[in-house]
Length: 168
Image 1: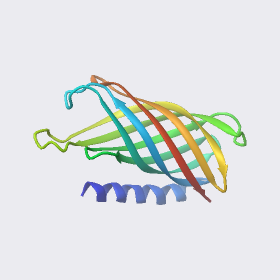
Image 2 (image 1 turned 45 degrees about the vertical axis):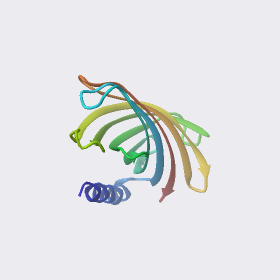
Image 3 (image 1 turned 90 degrees about the horizontal axis):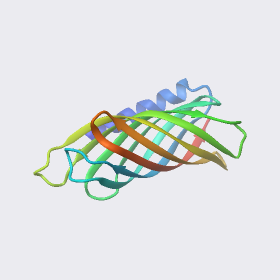
Image 4 (image 1 turned 90 degrees about the vertical axis):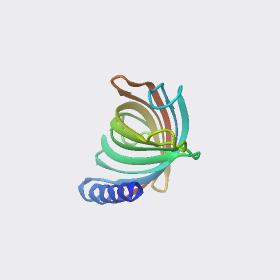
């Protein structure tokens, strides 16, 4: 049921982005690495690789909004759903264009060990990155993320890479 809700939300977000965005909208694949600090819900720190997808749209040359979903590469169930606003800096025609990111992460932990309970949490996310046009309506992005929530999972960091395909 969780997978169905995620797919439905992503589909609705993609449709609404294509209708609301004044410019281009995009869809892409993501790969990331997350280091999550200590928590009451797991022993020590958690380091994991994620693969996922994202959809988004530009409202003008300097602001885009995107929704992404990623899942853990190994057998432990750890999925992340994110909603982010990207504030692009510099000129639109620049070869490399930096951006500032502000968003919200919601993650679900479904441990393979039956003795541990499922866990969900949400966090505010800030970060930045750089994007470059690869030609043929493709873009590459690299970004760093810092996730925070009062008294939960101190020092959560992430690095994410994505390749996006633009549509008019």
